[in-house]
Image (tube, one colour):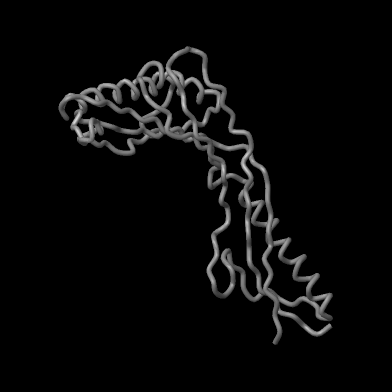
Length: 214
């Protein structure tokens, strides 16, 4: 029995549900204890600032803490200049109007650096499910066109997959690409203008249909 395998594709633009803002704190001191104490104090100030804006502890995570010797190249020699402590916190913000305020307060009030700002669409966003349905309908339309052109009629669905049917394996659907790298300076009080804009979501589905004689 003959069959045809097609890929259905659909795209949609969606307003992001949340922002993920990563803020880094770093300090160089003569010894490791002093460097770590400074970073610890400022990270606590950051947590207090988050709470002041209505964020809960579950809205942010600590990405790691590191303390290491730091060297600089001076007069053809690698010279130990102290110990650097670093940490980073990633905060999830669902109120887009709050992002600029957090950046301003983190940079000017805590001396943090903005490492990354990414806009995300929730897994449960209704647009995702609708997009899969659109991709499946596109697959059927393509299969019907192939079948008619080849003198067949379309039969039942044999297999549905989110990855290509047969080798080689392909990527899963929904790979939103919306990322902005930012640098901020603590030399003024105005907020950074931020906007999530829209994110383009793409869904692919692979469907195998039976081909029947016309």
